[in-house]
Image 1 (cartoon, rainbow, N blue to C red):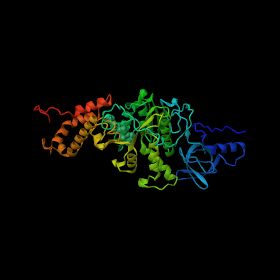
Image 2 (image 1 turned 90 degrees about the vertical axis):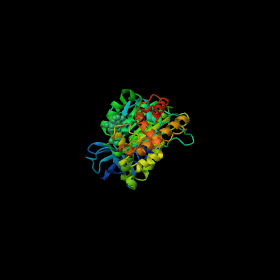
Image 3 (image 1 turned 60 degrees about the vertical axis):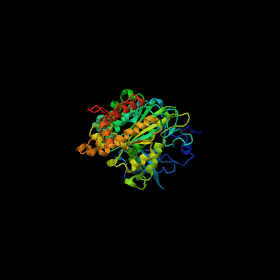
Image 4 (image 1 turned 90 degrees about the horizontal axis):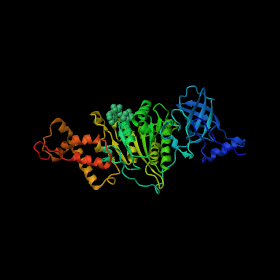
Length: 461
Ligand SMILES: Nc1ncnc2c1ncn2[C@@H]1O[C@H](COP(=O)(O)OP(=O)(O)OP(=O)(O)O)[C@@H](O)[C@H]1O
Ligand SMILES: [Mg+2]
């Protein structure tokens, strides 16, 4: 009799029904008709990776393996060699030794559920607080392709963000993907939190990858709060977790976003940070034997980031959209470093946060001059675009002359554009930190900020 086989464990990983090779073989093993086996044994442990003999004929990249050492622990298969498979462990390898039994669990599918909303999940797609996790009907792969280009819609309408600079200079449209670029401690995570509360969306998926655990707690309890969490699912894999867990958590979050998108919902995905995802990928790929390239990122990093980003964006007919915001940690504030450069070339906009601006206490520390939303000029009316061009011209004029202005070397009246930039500067600075009710209201505020103030003599500057 054929067994309707379903491997389940406490991580809720189960056999992918599409994975016929696995199912057929498992049925064969159960019926005693197959020589394939689900059990292997640890052959060697070196350089952070476990070599397992006996699983080569069944294992696939990304499968999970359970090692029964002094304690049971899990790992992820990252390479398949002639004689052994290589697994990266989820936890410390203390207490493991050659000869330990290893059991193969499949596979890379996940079953998101509407009941996940309002919860914090871990990298295995289970509630982080250990409660039993409801599983949905639909089995989804962790690594599918994004919607086909032939059926994918274009960007949708401009979204209200409740933040004046995003309503005006850097509009975010439905299905748009933008990056927040900054060095460490310049305010990326705080801005992600403000956008989580401000941007209009049906549901918010938050991926906190490689963050400190204190920050995850603060994000959930203080930044989101009860009201924010009620429309969100938070996926968290903190900095001390192994690279496969971080990467899996990121893929899990994107899969959940796709699940809600396919129900016709508008999903806001907040991903903090894609650099930590790239670092996790680098660690796995190098351990698997890939060649390091720029800053040791192997060539497959670009594909890994691109396929992640391409799964977000506008949906196809009958589905919703995934509007995505990725934070990018820019090492040494060098916007040309490999990950920053890759991400900038893939996304539909980049927002640069500047350390000098944050140091003088203006938050969000957006450097408007260096930031671009590629939904412009389409996303704004002619009048609004004219206003933005005028504001950018004055910001550039002030920036270029700022050293002279600060040192008192600039003589008022030498250049009418700089005179006007000096006049509007304090109001523009205040505008960038301002909250907003709607995009239209933000443009009204910008117009007011750009209106010349009467000088002491009563004439316009
Ligand atoms: N909107 C804000 N208002 C006041 N202070 C802020 C704001 N945004 C950031 N800060 C200050 O900057 C600090 C760092 O912010 P945040 O943790 O968001 O930076 P980050 O870029 O995410 O850092 P990391 O790279 O370490 O993750 C905060 O602890 C806070 O002091
Ligand atoms: Mg941060």
